[in-house]
Length: 370
Image (cartoon, rainbow, N blue to C red):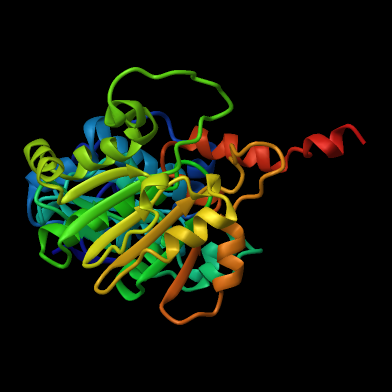
């Protein structure tokens, strides 16, 4: 485990020896330069690590992970072997120390660390004061949950935002969870990963994944093949998530034996789904009647996860989405939870978050034309 000190052995001070180099990063940004000049006479916060091999993975290729830490927190980091010295505002240094220690611990457990994991750790490690600066309007983030994790035999998945951690906690505690929000926030991926982990650990007997077979503004016409071949294009994102969290042979065996079932929403009517993990993806494309039908399929020993983006509804004109209606009607019922993601929770890549924010800020079509 990492050890920290705010004094004692300090690297990078003037002496007869050659000072350590800040390795492989771009020139310090203006934010870091200001922080350095403002704190030039202060003692750096020094973080010691035991395993130099893990330190190399912690820093990333060409110190890419450390560069993200510097840029996001406005600090300056100097590396000397297994020691990292942090300069900058005290609160930012403490956050950087917390992030480095957390990531080092995850590396020691065998997890792979990249830029995405660094950004996620920063989001979780921010203090309430820093969160208030980033999102003054969102008081619910004032108390950040610890980063939750899902482990399957293939990989260990760690939540990258406080909302994702709240989502995973809700999945553990409730039998029915709604997850709404923009694309790229991990709603479907985390749901599939959680369900796969439950199946591997014996907490459920089956995994049932469903989607409405609705085209995204296109008319594809006649599709050749048997029923599975006709509906597979609509369900492909669910297959992608499954193969990412489970070994391919495990997925194929599950599909062949019926332990894993991927089916259109239309095939759910009349069924009772017991001792299963049930996921409905793209739920914004369900009608009110379809949503009620699906929600009432849940049987004994089952959990149900419903995900969707209310801003991307592909239903024909005149048909209302059943997703937000269900969330509103079922609010307050025990054992039902709703996690609402926002543009700040986008983890696919930063550009996606910017696109989501731009669309949310733009006036609606009706507003633009009077």
